[in-house]
Length: 126
Image (cartoon, rainbow, N blue to C red):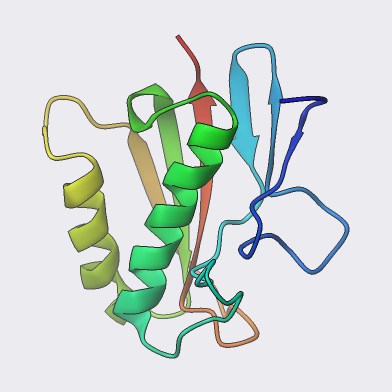
């Protein structure tokens, strides 16, 4: 890794901002969408977007030298409360131990461009 910016090919933003940044042992993301990194497209299905968003989260952490165990907070923005079940399924797969999970907060907001959800992460790399 050179510099603080982290990019995710196929899943990064169209704007001139990185997918995330690392300074020292702290890694923070910009909004992580549910784009399919294989084609850069956003699926219509909320469950597919949730799967891709959590896969993109893992890829960002790996690119920044972190793992899921380094995550201290995950913020989730959803377009509709109906997305919560899809988010919770991926959350439980990523963090199965109820005694070893990061903090999490969900906000409902009218996301654009067909997005059902976005993730933002803060990780402290041990």
